[in-house]
Length: 366
Image (cartoon, rainbow, N blue to C red; front, side, top):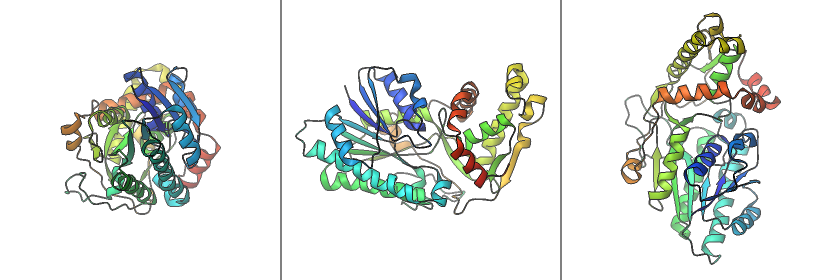
């Protein structure tokens, strides 16, 4: 039986992970920690908030002494560290919070784990699992092989640079102090509870409201897409079978160009609205509600500075060592994601507060 501390637990991947873990490991105790910034919403944990095995704590990982005391009090033996500022656009316009949370916050968490686990007289076993991104590897040429765990780091955005720094800190705490760590570098996640600033949920919400769907540059940037529940299962496999001190790539095996993602999404909207009068009534501003093409909303906007052209992830190491493998194809995962956002309109409307609307106004027209 594990006693987990999950940081960033009210964010997109964190909330999915907490729900997944409590379903898959019913005897484990989970402490869900989140400071509840704009992208962290307690409502994302609604399905499990009444679970007796879950304890939610509002706390910033920058508060190292409070985190240390919490770990001692709750007898934490496993940390799954999601907490991070993650939106590349925001890092370009304001990098400082990314340095604070992603670098200093990770360091405070590492210090707390070192103090409690290595000098506190506990018996263990312990594990610190750090969630990272494929963006630390930079960009790939069109014909280049996918990123492996041996690919050199070459981050191109402030966000990616801060995640790279946090990865190095985690590695250093293992090699210098013997802290038991593992790291996973995942590809682009999508699915339920993702804040509507990222490509797929943004496109879904904009389509439902009949507003322009912004696509950067020519839309030919390519990404490997990973359904969030598959990511959660991958982390589970690493916690169970991963080797201490190792890093593992977790990908979806679903490389797609951004414009093709949006076109597929629009096609799914057209088919769903055609067969469901209820959707046409609920979302009359979507072009598909009147028999039009949702793709007419696609609007190409000025590309962001330093935009990486291509990411692709080789997850063979995780597959061979842990048995990892995605259960969802991109087509099935995207379909489930669209259905979730349509069914959970109150959630995405509640998180789209004034700060989000101001952000959209500043960075996207329409």
